[in-house]
Image (cartoon, rainbow, N blue to C red; front, side, top):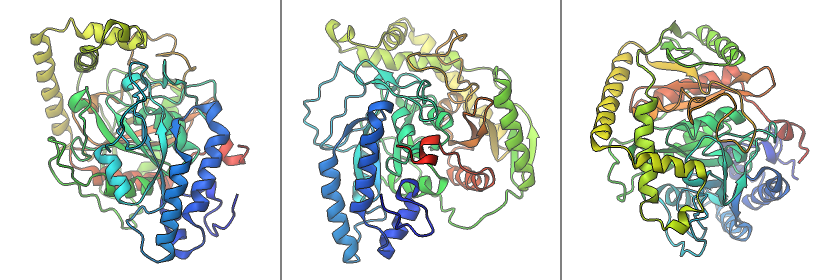
Length: 473
């Protein structure tokens, strides 16, 4: 492994922003960086299962082409030579997209890129492979009948969360620098919290999607990275328009390149429970301490709940209906291959009446209006990201919880409202595991959320799993 990264540490700890600077100076090369990533993926993936597909030959070929461009001073785009990954729910030309399901075939043909994948390639990034997901991204842990169990690098006996669990593990261990997640109820933010990384769910419509998720306008696509600056770099690329997405609307603008060092004048509503959540005491302790530091950064912090009841039944109505849509054209033989938990969701969706679905739509509109009113008084809402610590692998939910999302009450409300929401590390719990801090902003105020996250990250610092600290793998 090279130690050429003067002023930046070793290749295994580089950020995307630092990598680009090193390419510009000639201190390292795309071939060297991609080889390092592939070597480390090969060393850990059998144990942690972050990737369901890696194409080393294609990545090295792309790296050599990128190196030639850098040597000529002609990079193809802002991400030329930067290693990235794509979640196994997102189409990727030349790589299978199985969606974590044995009901799919690897045969392809895989000849189309989804909008995000296309934008990443156009900017020059090198796609290392596909990251693991539970079947159709249905739950907040990452395991599936097709790809098996994905494990947390902080403790392999525990889940990294889901559904973007593979991307979170790859991000935590820097197996590539830019990682795509998707979030239909917390699937970026939950694993970001459980692995001590940064995850951002943009305002719905800012990142073009095609094909549209079966969960419709619940599902957002966004970056998962080790730093806010890397997420900003990725956002500038993946928000570029694509005619295939009929939901795309307002143009994304999030230039936070300035060196803001305070939160002066920012009005923060801090809700410890949203008025209904049962949160582990050590999670609250870590979150309280982090929020106290925001006051020192100049923020005006008021402890307040936003004033809505738990929308879990509203969320479940949309989610179950989406699951029903996914199995509608499956044969009985295919249904027998499904994760039993996912099949149960789909069968429950079959019992939802049209009146119940329309009632859920109205409740969703009411919740969006409630949050719009809240943000008339507060620039940001801050909460814990997840109410509990990571739980053992092989479970859909932790022991002691009856509902499938009862343990993650802070994330799904903001899929219903389509607001931008981020999770960044706030500290370690009593077991030495990462705790996430959630920042929620008004719709289309993504720049505000990212700018605040950047300031808070610099105050609270990053978290690094033991293997990356020691370089033992």
